[in-house]
Length: 372
Length: 224
Image (cartoon, rainbow over all chains, first blue to last red; front, top):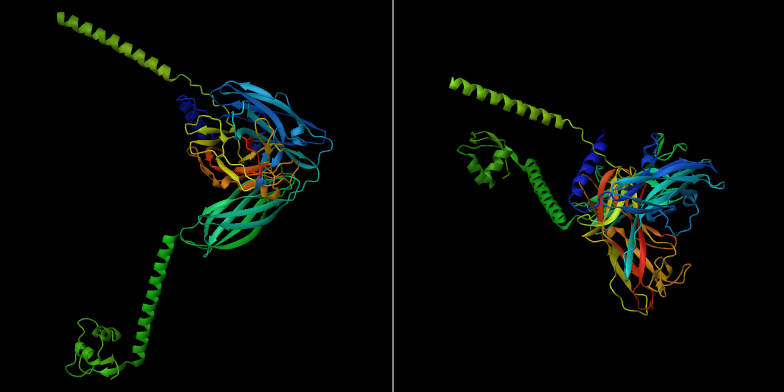
């Protein structure tokens, strides 16, 4: 048993036990492809087919009711639409369907399922003879049949689940991505990275977006990104956020986009023929947090003071080395009397002449001492 | 003799008791080897509006009352969901390459009163949402701000890896869907997330008649 199945088993058992405690709904209503292909794991999540002009494919959707109540679920097919940022979404039931939404014929448009049961609804997909070469997308929607909440004013919200249907009409397939821009927006609390990529081909591309942010020393402090589908002919934009670094500073963000360029590779598979595009690098400065700024200023003042101290000490030594002269010690002189005589600290005389405790000196001994 | 007899009775009793216990133990052992059957239904990608006890509930977005204005200065603001009523998303190994949650309205939709005698638009960019500039004859524009939302994991060990909010966007006649949340391919294949507080604001055209207006929006979740 794979770890994923174990997690799912534990999760399901947890939900099962929790469900006994009350009228809590877990899992809800949804669906998944009824006949996934073993050669493409992605077909467990979405419908993927290559379809010739005029050809009809048979498929099925497994409709699930994982709630504790009987549910009546409406099914309908719609075209895909592009949501803001270039994301994949599904057209509304009332919209005119001119693409995949019109190619799909469901054998049932409504199913009633008892709790924790499922039913397969078969459907057919027929590509019209005049369909464009390339990828066409649509959705099969599952929506619980229920009356909208009564309301006097405001917005009523309805929920639905869509299963993507990706159909490839063979021909002159083009796969190409272009980086449009990479913006870095800053506000008082966060940095927002907004990369944009355009798909100039005629099929969707699963792209991996990577944004590396490095500090002034070239160390990577954070990596953003992920794998996203970019629909044919569309521009996709993302927003990745990073809380303002506490200590602030100068940073550089670089953008990279990778995708499989093999035109024969279908969605969900990889040929290993990966192309990586490097986007513009953006330098930006982030102000440190107020407390961090105080700490940084204090450290700077401390370092500056230390620097001045060291400079003064070194300069003093340089002057001493330049001006002090070798002088013979007279009779009855000791280090204290010499210090008093030349008006300097006895420790300085000991240090310059490398004398050690008990700092005894002999008559006639040559010592470096200040000029008279 | 009496003692021997008593000892024999005690010994016999012990044999009977031990035999009985042995039988019970064997019975118990036989019971522990009973096969347990557990069916686990396949999971799906689902979304619903639930309270904090995860009980499904209906929802609407309500706006505070506004006064009729001769100028288009008013923007009604509200939010979708609250700390006690949130959108719950369950991915039970049904979307292995990420998913998208978007909100949209039918292209021909309009805000309307009960009798549908008074209307205004939700996707008209004309005059910054104040005047009519599209195919219908009504002004008005709705703005959705997903960045205002709070998105969090709904269970352990779900992570927020690859899950991000969409950008703040206004509906236009060319953009009838706004992305609320996007999950990248690297997001958890099995997980539960919850979200609330999506900003919603509506520009009300000038001289809009006094009425109670309603509108329908559909939230869609789809596997990528």
